[in-house]
Image 1: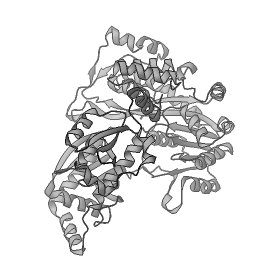
Image 2: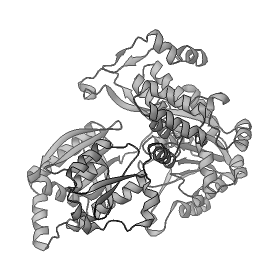
Image 3: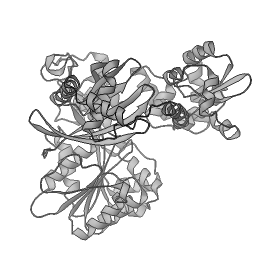
Image 4: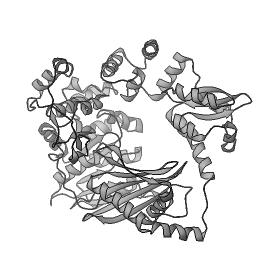
Length: 554
């Protein structure tokens, strides 16, 4: 607790965060087991650099950033001098960057893996000096190890390649991989992971956002599996030193499936991630996605405008594109022309002109946008605003009579404004063009087949502000449930995911507040529902568990 007090004192004295921010973080701490710095960091209240600096000052640990420019980083070949298996460095997430006669200099992150340091000290013939580094700096150091492993890769001649093709065509390998594909489709998995370990290859499916192991391929079949995946995805079967991308199209259980394949070299061989995409057209609706009626009404009002821009925000995999698809389905009719620019086109939308970005040949979002404006569209969907050029063209399109829908990577709805300003977009353009903002997350839905009612005790009822929520949102009927687990949900207690959202029409009131305080982010003050409140409502009606709702707050 002494460390926490010192950190809080450092944050407040240096105006990194306010006392109010600290109180919010401490409230979250009561519900989850986490350090105050981690809570502040994960909540977006402080930046990683600020947390690293605070730890450095409080614990008197030097910063890697202050020394890295003054030394010559360790050469890949010099790693032999460390005399420690490189796998241990990866396991502890602690990486060496310099060696002198007596010392080994290593970098570690804000998690402060002291146990790992102690283990390395036992093995090292040199004294260990450690420094704090950001995740980006650690990643750069980690690349030294991947370069080392790549340099040790095997090269193949023509005879070897033919043998690999033969291995890939053997019946047991074909049957095994086909079974993996069938299981992935059956369990509605979004990705299949083939991960090379020292003695085997692990196969995992991402289902409802979490990974589940379904198979372990023995060492003697690993090479054949890698060859089979490369052959199917039309990769270079002899290249094992560089990452590759490929594609597989096939029919599984009477469904046409398009699979995007990515391979990367790792310490124990290549690993693959296969993203499963359905070729069939989809017809999602906001109702089927389980948005609340008041949210649907608000979204309808925003996107029914003749012009303007609607932005939905959130991390990768939070369902932003699916929500936009649902809005496009709602807007799609014979009287309007809709064009989308996507990277990639994940699902086919009937009656909508979908364009695939190809950045490798210079066909970027910005290039595509300029072209489609000459195609007389009424509604434009931009898969993602990644840079100032795309942002500026999107906003200009909105100002010249088009309705534009797009996504941004920010943590909150109002954070989209700050992000666009940081990109270089003038505030008066945002004020004139933006019609609405939305932030979204996905929560695992309780399995309807096995979930059971949950009786809230008095402490939970008060701590979760249930009374206030029910009074404010009278369409909610109190019916909380908890997970159980059954065969239908593979004994996880969850089946499927539903969106958690905060939606804000960009009204004059909000514009005035944002103009005076660009970092304003208190939705409750404006009378709008926050992500956490929406998650709690989903919990109170029995759609998600309390644990899933609390994840949104943390």
